[in-house]
Length: 214
Image (tube, rainbow, N blue to C red; front, side, top):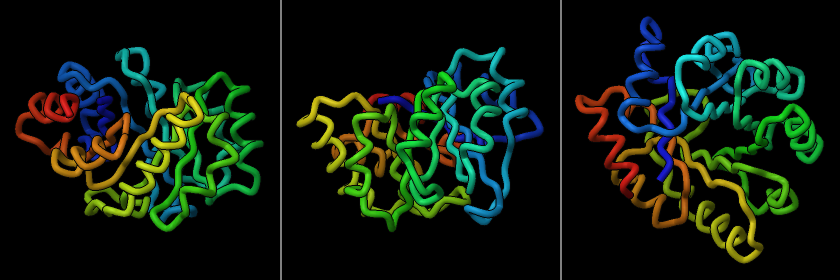
């Protein structure tokens, strides 16, 4: 299991120390939530924040754009060090065009869907994606409860991936802990994003190792 701590729940007064700590604890990805206050009702960070982290850690930077115009800002996020760059299906008119543009920036394109979006709507794009992020909460704020409807979406994507011999990662974000992580693992997920559960834990190393072992 790939574990991706979400810095949305980190202590931003000591962000580099926080990121180095979860890396030492074994986390492979760093999940970076970008919100614009328009597509979702919250504002978080821009590329300059993680650009300054990139030289100090060896983690994969998994950047989740919860913004209304991902193509307008994509070059800045790619230049700042994103390895995976994920946009929302609901935010764009032509997902195929966005995927192609992201790939031209030398990042791995990902797509995300909100809890109310039918996963089958992604079928035309599966072969062109490196990552699919299933939201198991409404995007915008950390600390929400897991929505079980995400499990059927994960299982559907796993089935399509195996039947068509595709190579994208299946990621889930929202309300992840050991119990919900196990359910997601059984459904076929590859990457668990966890914010509060990791950064607020008394023993981060134990929590991350438990998730990795699922």
